[in-house]
Image (cartoon, rainbow, N blue to C red):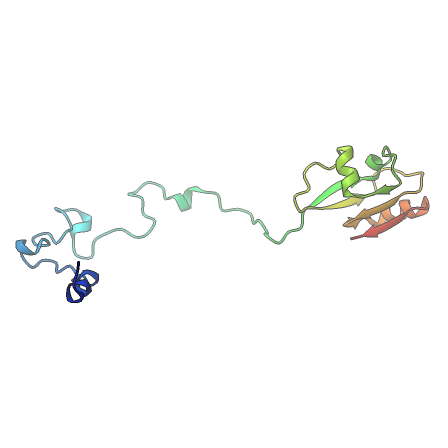
Length: 145
């Protein structure tokens, strides 16, 4: 069992006293080894220095920007929707039909490529003006969620 006066000494180590003789355990070279750039006063290399090799930060490409707030849309054209037999179309129906694969929090947008000749009700995140006009001209409705 440790008494209280010894217990306090376990937690408080003395700092290294460098260059104070061989008996201290940190004498002569003061823990810096023998010779070389790191043994000299003021020696050492800057952060990121790789011994003359081209540093990693200079090797990797630094062009472009990935906006973390960018909203990615899955694009679906009207010509793809024509083949579906359902009157009410949403993400789940498009996924079952195989037009949309992995949603993963992405939103989907309807574009006006192709014509539509029957009445359909579409629920989507975004729609182009031409697609909306074509759907409404055919008697359908568009709901944006």
